[in-house]
Structure formats: structure tokens, C-alpha cells
Image 1 (cartoon, helix red, strand yellow):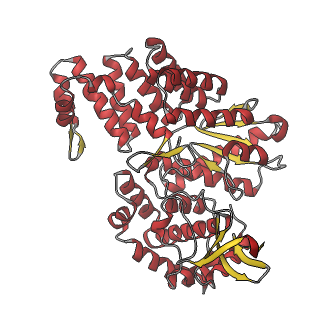
Image 2 (cartoon, one colour; image 1 turned 180 degrees about the vertical axis):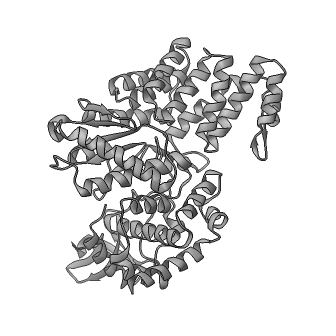
Image 3 (spheres, helix red, strand yellow; image 1 turned 135 degrees about the horizontal axis):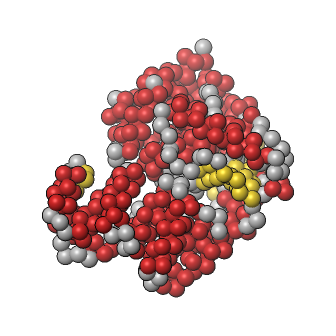
Length: 496
């Protein structure tokens, strides 16, 4: 969350800039900066909207670079999750990036079904160009082979999850479980899907059943560790994941262990309260026990409001964790400018507050909007759209910065939206100011030109597997260039 005054000042500064410069230091690091001037003794520059001075003796060279000098992370794992956005992510051998959460899901991908000699033919039978064929599933079931029927529905469940439809994945899995209620592979996949739906207590029960049915299944042990983690039982999660590592080491579990250990040091003694839609965790000695009921009531009220404004509901229990400023930094390793993080759990820093303030309400609505969007499209939403909708829901408006930001778009000096599809977490404060401002302006323009249902159609297209620009074209008949031109006109009209 950025100060409107500071944001306006930053944008006014950016609007008059020449292309950015890169300052290369003698220690091998570099700084992307603006308004660089150098004397024999010192180098003066602007970064993050703040003026800095360093000795000339520490600078190797200064080179101009094109554009606005914004360096945007390319990871798609930035803000949403359980594991997307701010969850551990690593680059695989094929060059792609995958979150630990995705790797856990992939490790549960129906090994017993795939060992069936008829698996390829069965998969081809029920999965066509349009996706899962329910007619083909019914035909398989009518043949009376319960093992084959269970395998077919499990294939359908995994396919549906991989293509962004967790609800269908659960429906198909329920049919599997009616046919084979104690099969460990089905139980562990069910536990995983229950965690996706935010049903952590039910997921923990199912994960325990899976592990009891087959203690030697590394998948069952990994899922049990995740269920303990999502329930805030860090000691049990760490011990269980260590056991899984002895069975079959995996780098993504190593990443989870590090994350759990970091959070255990902060959240180990937190209190917990619950309402219809939320689990609230907090350190009572810092936030005050009287603060929790008010905060939960605020969350429940905002949930209903967002549901009405966006036209859909996440249908999950959302965990909200309240930290002091230092705890937030230690647990999340978020940049200083972050007012909250949503990695499947909403994590917010509260500094010296004893009640819900208007600013805290804005942060909560922002992060809750991320939960709504993630539940609707999973990891398929570009960050500019995610962040634009979240800011709009605070509510926030571009009015105070419409003129300088509109001029940037008009002159082609704004950061192209295609470069804002990935995470913002690697940006410095000034770069983040601009990225958030552009995101909000884009969503404001889309809402003004296409309505809230235009935004909903974009999300639908993303959910169906479209890439961001293709989703724009299919849903609202705009490509990125046309969208950016529309943003320029919208902002300049707003500024008049």
C-alpha cells in the first residue's frame, strides 16, 4: 500500500525522466537509477523516488538503458497461492519455473492408475479436445469394472485440477472414493484438494487416514506434512517432512522445511480464532485479545461486500495471520514497501494498533481480493490484473496521479503491461509505485469501458487456459497495445 502523496511525487518525477541508467559498482553489483549526475567525488542518483549519493570511487561505470528502468520478476508465483506468489519457486531443468505447491501436486499424479497397462487408452478415451468427456466416464462406469472406473475418475480429477477447475476435480474424486474409500492414493489426493479449498481440519483428518493406510507412501507423508503446516502445527509439519525426506528426498520439500522453520520461529505461540469464512492467528500479547473479535467481524463484513462487488465467492476458509512489523519481515522476507502478503494465507503487519483503522481495512480488502481471484482462476491471472482489481476493491483511485501517469502512457514511456505479468516482489519501492499505479489504471479503464462483467469475462478466459493477451482479446476485444492506448485516453480525461 503506497502513500498517495508519495506516489504522486514519484510519478511526477518519473514523467519527466529520460531513460534510466545502470550504475555498475566495483563490488560487482548494479543499481538501476534515474537522474544520474557524477562529479569527481560523488555520484548522485534517484532510485525508489529517493535521492542517493555514493562515492565516485565505488563506481565502475554508468551506462544508459532503455525504457523506465523497471526490472520486473518473471516468476508467476508472486501473490496468490497456497504457494503461488511468495511461495518457494525454483527453475527446473527445462527452464520453466514451478512453485513447491505445484511440485507437490505433480508428485501425487495418480501413480497407481498410470501403472495400469490400459492407462494411455483410458486417458485418451475420457479426455478429448474439449476436456473431460462425462459421457465417456458414464460409458466406462456402465462396463462394471470398479477398478477401471476409479482409475478413469482419478484421471478426470487430475486433469481438472491441472486445468484450473478444483471444484470438478473434487467431484470426480468423490466418485473414486465411493468405489475405493480406503485407497491411500485417493485419500492423499483428497487431502490435497481439501487444502486447496481451505478446509484444513478435514484435510488433516484425510491426510492422517492416508498415512495410516500406507505409512511407506512418500506422497501420503508429504501431504500430511502440508496438512500440519496449514493447520499451524509447525513442529509436526517439520518432523513429518523430515521423515518424507528420508524416504525420498525432494528439493521442493527442502524449501517447505525452510519456510516452516522460519514461520515457526515467529508464529509458534500464536492464538487462533475462527469465524464462518476465516481463521485468524495472532500474538495476543501484541495485538490484544479484544482486537480479534473486531477484526473477525470486519473480515466477515468485507467478505460479503467483495462477494457482491465481484459477483463470485472463493468458497474457501481464508487464514489471516497478524504480525508485528518485525515478525512480518522475519516470517515472509517481504520487501519493506509491502503492506501485506497473500501466499494462500493473508499475512499483514500491524504496528501499535488496538482496533481496526480505515487503513487496515484497506489492506484487508486488498489482500482478500487476491484470495477471491486466486480461488477463481488459481495461478492463471497476470499480476497487473491481480493487483489492479485488489487496489480497486480497497477502494483506490488513480485521480491524484492521472495527469502524469496518463502522459507516460500517451508518450509510450509507461512500462508495457506484458512486462507486468509476473511477480512485483523483486521491485524496489519506486518501481513498485509505478507497477501498482499502472495496474490500477488498467483495471479502472477496463471497468469504465467494459464494466465489472468485462473483468469477469477476462478472468473466465484466463480460467479456461488463455494467455493474458489472448484473454483480453477473447473477453473484451483488446490487445495490449489497444489497452494501453485506452488507458492513456482514460487517464488524461480523468485529469481534466
